[in-house]
Image (tube, rainbow, N blue to C red; front, side, top):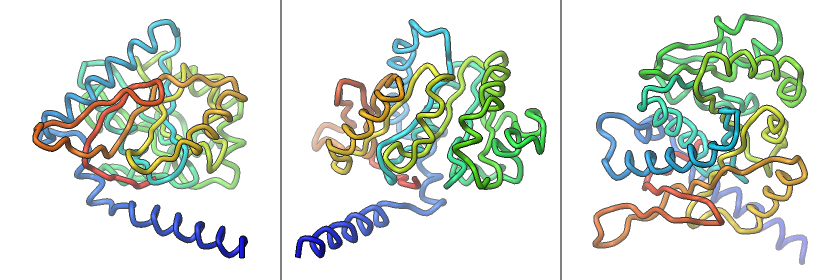
Length: 262
């Protein structure tokens, strides 16, 4: 009876996650642009300010973005944070570090993943060949590339460290979109080369236990969490704006977009 109950819960959780996923067309509508609501743009600006404060004592400007589980709008958040920083005139690079289930390239019409991070790390192309320039003003992107058989080994390799070192000399900020910590440990492999992690949580979805599990793994890897970004917040009734919450010791922004591609 107990085993049947756990199995039922597993199926229920799987159905819930699948119901939160959106199409590519839907996800693209949540990317910052000229028609984005003012309150959403301002929320990202607020997050940008908090991130800069968190980085003030670190010489590194390499930031990984992760979450505890799939379907928390992590990739949408990674893209929008990168765009927000690029809006300041800073030279920004976004890397899709999720070589298992890449999604960044799907959010932009001009992108593909024929060559990308896996291609560079595997020695199949140069860094210059992998960089997609000026996808937005001041924003370059390296897509995930073809799915390799050994993503964790590539991310933890000397080639990855050398790549980050080279890129850090050319960009003011580098954001790396990584898989959820509770699914695979890939994000933890970048701890030695990054200033810290932005941790995405989804309002009314992410469980405290999932967060604690992820934080325990990050702590064991000597990782640093720069802050928490809360997504998919409900609009406050009668207020006409979206709430920002300081949750789990970090900062948050809210919008109604699900964008739960990952």
